[in-house]
Image (tube, rainbow, N blue to C red):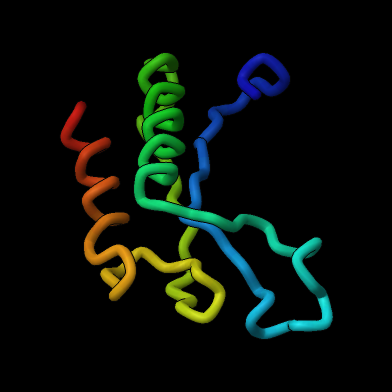
Length: 97
C-alpha cells in the first residue's frame, strides 16, 4: 500500500465476522471470515505491527475492527469459548514492542 499511495497506511485487523446467524438466506458464500482463533488473530495483528515497525516515518497506529457484535462474532471481549484469548493476543503483540 505504501508504494501505491503517498499517504500513511494504518493496518486494520479483525477477529472476524460472520453474519450468517442473522441472514441464513445468504449462506456460507457471504461469510467474510470464519474459523477464527485467538492464535490466528494474534498472527494477523503481529503482521500489522511488523508493517508499522517497518515504517517509522509513519504514525505508529493500527486499527482493530470489532463491533462488539456477539451474534456476528465480531467482538473483543471475553467469552465462554476462548476466555480472554483474543485480549491476551492483543497484549502479547503490544507487549513485544
